[in-house]
Image (cartoon, rainbow, N blue to C red; front, side):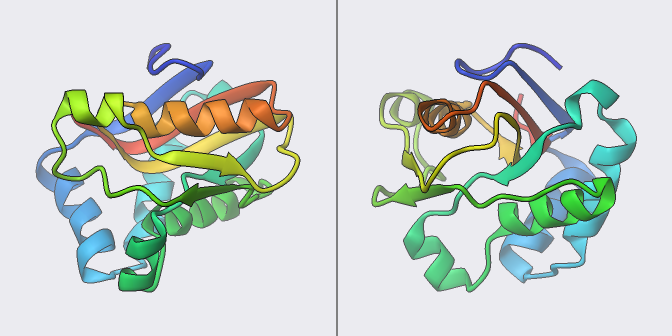
Amino acid sequence: MGNGPPGLDKVWSSASYEGVARNLVGALKFRRLLTVADLMAERIEWMAPAHMLSGTIVPVPPAPARLRRRGFDPAGELAAALAAHLEAPLSHCLERRGGGRQVGRRRAERIGHPPRIHGTGPAPRSVLLVDDVLTTGSTLTACARALRAVGASRVVAVTFARRL
């Protein structure tokens, strides 16, 4: 846990992006094993500091082309599973517009050209932002900026895995 990317009050990840954690992320994202999201959410619920797990859960929005190609949203599945485990409200109040994927980009390119993320309406005051993997933090920063622009005062993030 730490202060993490700019714009976030705190960020926490349940595992390093290697071994079993990497395999679980791959199973969800690339093999469409949606039940894996429940296992990932369970791990977050068990391991995250309790003060991190409050507020309205907001998934990091997918790139529109990715969503069309996959037919589902991995971060959305993880967020929905976590909301169910925590009995917390879930809000899809962010959208990603245009822009390419972050996967495969170099670190400097990811940070220099973050995704364009916008609020779709008023944000909850307290937000628990959820994503599957934290890499550079540029996507979480863009989300936090968009959430604060539409009314969020507290933005913390949890991810299943983190690339070190």
